[in-house]
Length: 120
Image (cartoon, rainbow, N blue to C red; front, side, top):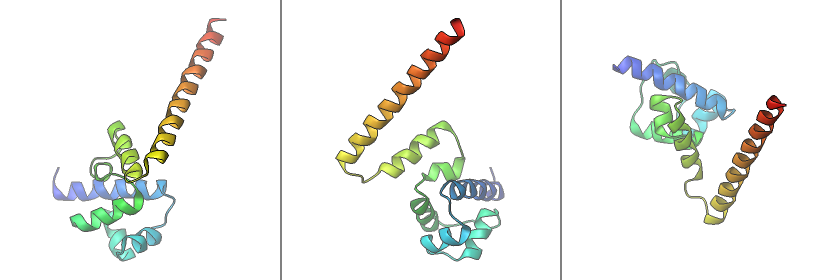
């Protein structure tokens, strides 16, 4: 991947992360401490950015740098979750873990029920 392709990829991935965060370009730029016009050019793939600006953007968006550099692969979702949970208290992490276990068990239960219905 050359520099221009990387800028386009990062811009596309920042755009998607921004939409997922329900933010406007102006809101994200302000929270990251950069100008809206600079951010717009990054998102369009016309400009690159240094490590510090990347750090500020991923911090505001609560995503991993991998998700911006590489896009939406399964492992990127896991990295994004890890980034959101970083520095949370143990009690909160325990609650999140138990919630995930519950959701997965409900998913399994619903899939079993659907298989049983199909067999009937």
